[in-house]
Image 1 (cartoon, chains in turn cyan, purple):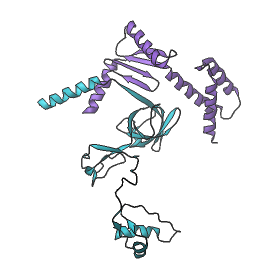
Image 2: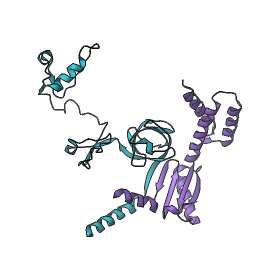
Image 3: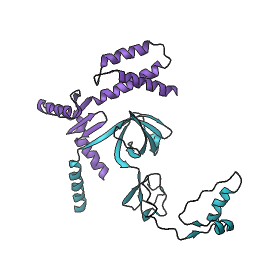
Image 4: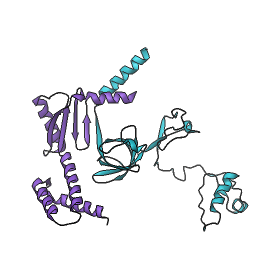
Length: 181
Length: 130
């Protein structure tokens, strides 16, 4: 009981100090998971936009007077004329071992009914990849199960490969063989 | 070019033409709107609709709405007006509105910028924290 009282007092103390600035906009148009929002003059590219009702959007199209937002949630709950706010955060998802074996949506929120994801760290989705020097060198092969490939052009684990070919020449088969083996 | 884009571009050009010495001229805008409406252009309605939107947005950027739960004293109003004029320029029009649902504190909106120091906002933040 005492803990609860302390917690409430702490939260009240925090809330009183918050007299903040917000950048707001008005939803002007919604259709097929995309919204046009008037205002939001300080929105950044790839910034998460709070659309209300617990729905988040992704600012992708910054225009002079409006922002095009992809709605990452149930857009049928939103209405034209509703308020939207910038969050100051670029699109980010929780990362860590707590995500192993979980099913999450585009924002990294669990949708498998197993409770919240245990992760304190979030990484931006559009993070710059580390340079070649910083990466761990490839020292383990991937056995594709296709003898000519494994013999002549072996693939390292972690590498990317491009498969080019005419139609019906077995591109998909080559992709699925390593999975099957 | 798509008709929608073309009309938006024309509306933007029209809007820019309504600025005299860096300030938006309402009489000029009125004359321009009348001239477009009188012209027989096929896309005049689309142009006028977008032009109206641009005018409304510009007006919102030049208008500050100060909301408070009770009427503010004259000295405080003058202080807020002066502070806002210092930040957003002397052309800013400040309006004071009473909104009992704020419970206490002041909420100021200039265009899409909102400075919220109301009790209602604090309670909303408190609700989010739990």
